[in-house]
Length: 492
Ligand SMILES: [Fe+2]
Image 1 (tube, rainbow, N blue to C red):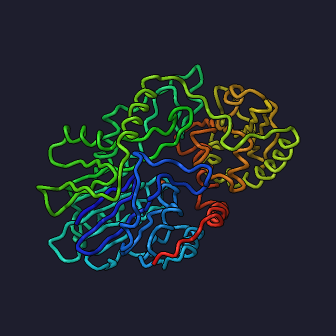
Image 2 (cartoon, helix red, strand yellow):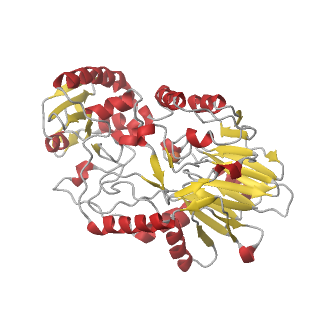
Image 3 (cartoon, rainbow, N blue to C red):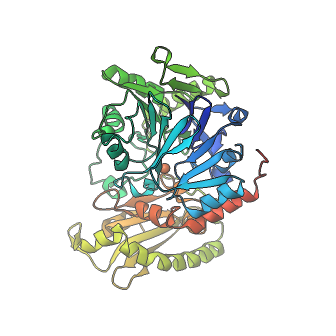
């Protein structure tokens, strides 16, 4: 069996005459909103004609760095298309509209595809909730001696899979493919779940993780209770460039370099970090690395990007949030109209926020910064940098309604409210009406602050409320717009 890396988290698994494609990103960029497509790192081109005979396409989940409509449109409709039962309806509909026959799996019983046996597993429930709809895949050679490949994607490894190994329903995998999503931002640049309250002048900002901490979390802690030591662990992920004032919250990960370092520190496991177009053979240890000629890395540009990232990290300049992702509002009349729609949206959302962990945590608080709390405990502050305007609303936890907050400075809001968020009005309404996805603005134009842990704040609430699962109708709008401009290929 062999696994070929195609970029970011896209893999081609082959054995005998069987070819399985996982989370295909085949273009030079990806994204569901055309204006905000994101470049793959390292830059590479894929000759998709080499995939004309794939037997099966598997989509682990619907995040846009896994589900790319333009890439799917390049693939043969003769391939069986498999998703887990947690995938949301608009994605299933899109796959059918592209002309694929869709199979939804909801059990871990093996699916036999020519020379391979596939099993699909639900992610471990301890996975961060916005990745918990990931379905993981285990591929074994159908006729032994068995070697197996487990692809964990963005989630913690399935407990069900571990039990299947212990109870010998499956062989233990030779290769586990893990995602390194660490994206460690340099000091001064903010991260997606940055706590602005803790960044205030009077607080000590925690230093970032040590490099070894990253390798430990991806390779050791991640596999801590895994029942068998795999021969190989391959790292992938972090394979895109989301530029904004340098790389800010989204530096890419250089997996080949990280794997080399990990191997120097490891004795009994082979850590694999591949460039797109490279693969690993599990049945021929002497010549385990393979190269294919239909994926071509632009090595010059690759080296240039590495230098650029190094300079960005060394410079340690502080990074400001973007003024807005969408073009900002231009006139006071536009602002007033947008704010009116925003007020409706806020009060529609209020009860969900009160029931989310943020609302429950803030209700448990009696004091904040030495001062007793009143009924308004969560604030949304909207800005329009072009017009120099700000409008803030505090959620009254008794009435369940947002009320106008007269404080006008961000620092004053942070000092007054234990939980808050500040973002461009145009971006908030862009997310609320399905022009943008929440992922397009987090780490770019939002500042949030919170007490308790990083899953308790308003960004996780946004992931939940505006994400694909909480608001499938918004994803549906985005997919439909994408499909409307797509020329659907007639591939067989
Ligand atoms: Fe994901």
